[in-house]
Image (cartoon, rainbow, N blue to C red; front, top):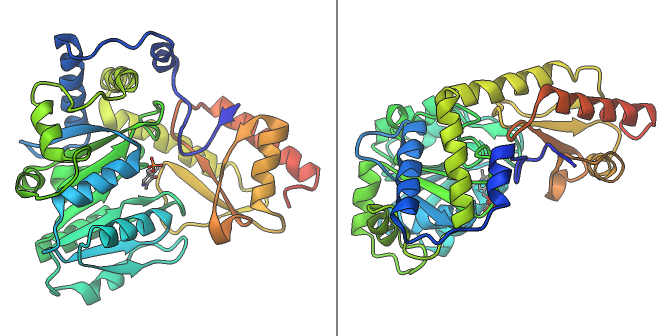
Length: 358
Ligand SMILES: *Cc1c(COP(=O)(O)O)cnc(C)c1O
């Protein structure tokens, strides 16, 4: 199968080779060294401010979203949330569940965030801002400069789910004043699912230190304490962390996060430039490099997904909910080349010939 979804995505050969090996015992100086290097590279690639720390949670991205909400926010906060799709909705549910006061800006599918959306919330006593910088469900990337300036003016703590955006789009934690950045192993890190990553600024670390959160597994104080010696409180996904180590080292060797982002960006731009003959419309006002959301005209997007999967050995990413039959997404993260996209383009053109894509 050729995989153009947004996660799990295709892993490179070296990462897959580690997956075939025995998983080692982990309470060792060798594994601690691996974890300390993982932390250092993650902070560096996120361009985190000096004194930042990073924890690795065994659990998918949502575990880290929940850990961040529980440990870095309290019932004394007043949060402004951007909710433009299913991942924004997930934050909505988490904030409600953990009884953190919030208001939300609802955006419709494909809609970009603009200054006029934020203007009514200026100077209204908010303390924190929560956003999925790339709302993967709709393919919209919110403007980080706009958010950053709003948060600076209003003195807001900034918590960003960059799960599908990290490495795909530029991310500058220190410059943008981001306090918490979250990502996951199965997106542009191109490893198996099961590990998520939280980078915390000194301001976020101070909040975690004071946190009264009542949860054992997602207690970030304990994760940070153990992390000082390159360890985790409980048995982590050791194999996946070794794969992440290999992947981060590779990125480091190949020119760092900028080079990786440039590669993904070039692939996305090229793909978007060669699909004009297809009866598909790009349906996002502001895109991430991670994915291209495509709207069908006179056929079901879900049928396109199913036919590609069953008859061509290709996965694209279907949409759920009300857009199930209207939108499918083509991802640009993971070990993919132009040749891989050529196979996808040939298949899509074949679907046009067969009258399935119209
Ligand atoms: C993938 C993703 C998540 C995490 O989902 P999990 O299934 O828990 O890994 C969260 N937010 C965004 C924006 C994502 O793209």
